[in-house]
Amino acid sequence: MTQAAAMLETYPADLGSLDREALAECIRACVDCAQACTACADACLSEEAVADLRTCIGRNLDCADVCGTTARVLSRRTASDADLTRALLEACATACRACGDECARHGEMGMQHCEVCAQACRRCEQACRALLASL
Image (cartoon, rainbow, N blue to C red; front, side):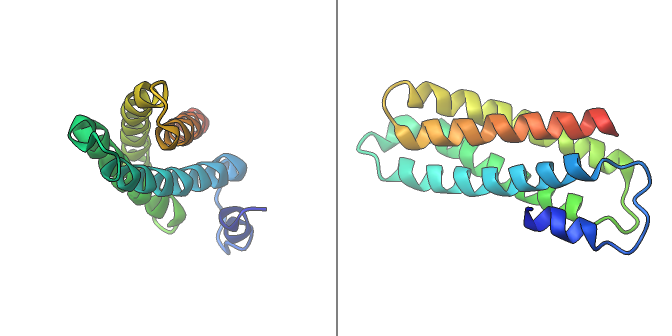
């Protein structure tokens, strides 16, 4: 059981018809993706051709920020705003798709950290879309 799932299990208020499993998975995927994107940006800065990785680094940092914010907002269920939640999930999925696409290009050129990051971005995008579909 993930930390997010454990916390949701102890939540004292009724979450209504909210899919706790999809919510917990999305929170976990966002946290994992934020970490992967932060680490990938740092690894890109250590590459010899760092100037060629500016777009990748920017997408990594944007995605990490969006994912981290999304995870925090999803973790706060008291008086949550459904419209804000939907908008954040859409933004997170968009950031993950853009970052995943950029990292996948570099992963194909042998940058393993970018390949790992692309996979984390794909998982997070899917988790965001799954939670959106359940709302």
